[in-house]
Length: 389
Image (cartoon, rainbow, N blue to C red; front, top):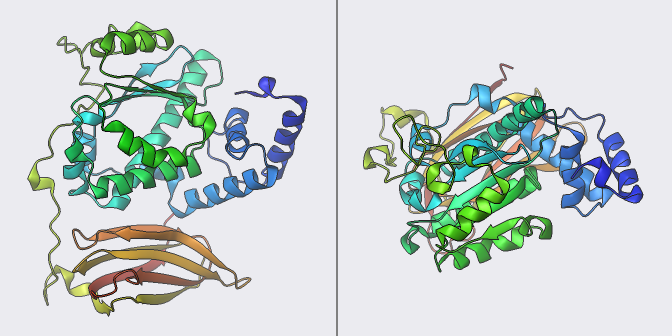
């Protein structure tokens, strides 16, 4: 949607919104077409749209999103075994991404990376797509603010629908909805098995009516979905396997030079969570017991805003909830920096970092309140240093 499609009333709301956020440092790809999305996501409620937008900008700053493409290197297992690739653009100049999700070994991937790194990779890919939008806009001379996604469910098995997969799928959906609203022009889901409806019903409540209207779902009738794809994507922008004319130099119809087609993750990528031993590499970790039905709170005073906080932790005997809040020094208000999430720290070491946007007292909480009978042994390290950039 662009400004010319807005009614006079909605155009007025957009002008107010743009004026209200004029003080913000915006992502480099921000255009009027991107700003409209926040109003659409909140049904043109001016106050709610501005709150959502400002919270997302703070999330970007805390998680160093603006520099992720240039300063973060994704784990090798994700770049080699998470099936994804951009093949070209659709008839509206939007980047076309193909995700052969049915061929992705999600169990193996989630045994090989932390949840935080997986979610960070989703952000990395989305930021890359926005960079492609900018390039396509320059090349075509037309505004580009959406992407087209093809999700291929061929070879998908019910065995892939583990609790861990379902949980991270909902977190990923929430991340996109909260920070990249209305990001797709069209989503084609093809080769859909019957079990697909189970997973889809879990994420459906997170999706707006506008997003749901962009979905086109097809069974394994290749003729039907190939025709649908070619209605909106030129043949020279699609791999031959998906009804187009593109092939690799060696004639491969899947275009493996552009799309990673997944496959089983070798077990040498799996992360083993070993209990730290005295004098070993884990000697820098402090040890605590988080009692059953209780929480462990650690307070750290950050004197200088924009400091960098790094952490790592692991647990025995089960997962643990993790959250970071900040009591701001200037006004005493408490804000959520990282929302509470269950972390499988009993399976692998959890590590991460944030930019401390505020000076004040940061409260790191390890939550075991949901476990009525089992205490958790916790090893952790938290470090605060001056941010280099």
